[in-house]
Amino acid sequence: MVEHLPRSLRLALRETRDRALLVRRGTALCTNLQLLHETLEEAGVIDKLWLTGGLLLGWSRLGEPLPTDLQDADFGFMESDQSAIRRGFTALMDAGFTPFTRWRRNDGTTSEWSLKRGGVQFDFFEYRDRGDFLEVSGYFPEHSNWDDWQESSGEPIMQSRLLLPRQRLVSFQLLEQTWLKHADHALELDSLYGRRWRAPDDQFYSARGWSTGRDSPSVAERTVWERSDIVWDGSLDGP
Image 1: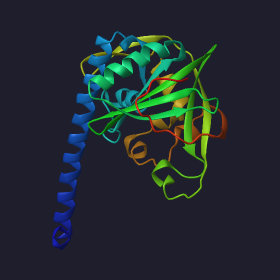
Image 2 (image 1 turned 90 degrees about the vertical axis):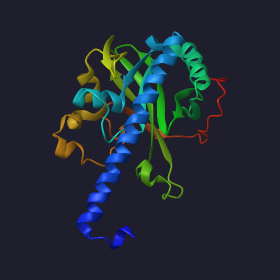
Image 3 (image 1 turned 120 degrees about the vertical axis):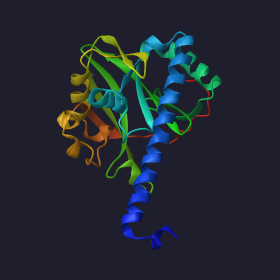
């Protein structure tokens, strides 16, 4: 058995396994991200959404996805473009993306949709126009983090409102495809994460326990989330 091998050899095997896992995850993210772009471009809605969150952060730091963040990708779209985005979801499901979760605000309207393909989760956040700001919703366990939440019996989920500076969209290149982002991506990342995203590698990659919905400097309000069902069966009906 592996555990009977010398410690140095066990560590070497583990590092090899971890590198192989990163390659598989990175390949899955990139392949499905490219398919998502092609599908939404063909559906005529690729210009209705922009990259944000961890994928934008990875591009900003490395010019590519972060090696520690290869299992999901975040996108934003405006509430006014919701009907177009829903058409895009239909096209993605036809292309093999599986509906996963659908988060609704306390007012009953959908704030976030997620689809999965190849073990990668693609999250679409609806933004509301608030003049000089854009409002987006976030969710987080009241006291713990999502990784520990299953062990926290009865712990409530909180809903937050984040207000980010409104900006124009500009095009940029990622994985040899053209996407949209907010013009001053550093301002967006500062607003989402504070200056922690600028930390040196040894500090940045060792950071743990962050929850954007709870900890972002852009959080304007936190309230108890009064709903419970987030399973998305693929239906595009309802608010």
